[in-house]
Image (cartoon, rainbow, N blue to C red; front, side, top):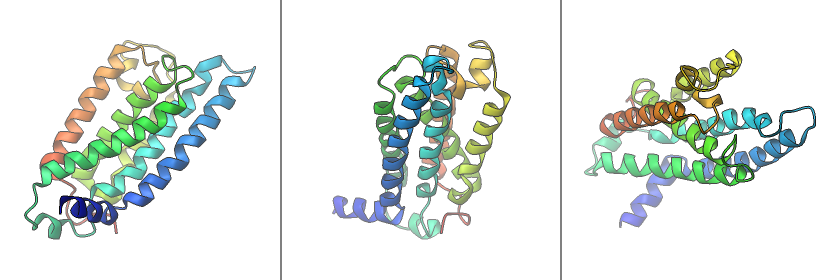
Amino acid sequence: MNGRLLLLHTRARGGPAFVLGVAVVAPLAWVAGSWLASRPYFDGPAARIPVVALAPLLAVLLLAPTLGGADEELERGTPLPWPGWRAGHLLLGVASIGAALAVTGLRAPGVFGAYALVRNTLGYAGLVAAAAVLLGARLAWLPAFGYACAVYAATPRQVGGFAGVWAWPLQPSSVTASWLTVAVVFVLGAAGYLRRGCRIGTVAR
């Protein structure tokens, strides 16, 4: 019974489209990262910064519409332990994205590779989860997208320090502050989503 419910839940939330989207983003990230790092006029692994910043963002934006159902109010009327279902849904989605993208960055995991891709996946997922609570699934992508674009446009030169906090998507994975910031963002966003779920009335259609 639980297996059938899980299948219905996954289909209702757009799971197949999400999986297909991640299956497209991951190979593109691999190709783009390899190409950028191989260009003689770029600075080796640091050339993969655009991929590290944008590939997790694109994949997490695919997750955003799945955080709410077609009729969130009706769903909440069913006798299911929704906090547990939300936790499983969010964690499975984040794990799928993180694993798929980490494979694309294994060539140099400790620079701008697998570790940074996983970190940014967690950070963007936290932003999207928090936005789903406040704005609904249909607009949950907006804050993460706006934040990533603003940080990328700012092109911070500093490594670590305060930049490790506000510009974590562009920091090397060795910067502790970036991981601490992402941990806080993900935990707060996930906790809010698990407790309150997606905002009713603005879910994806």
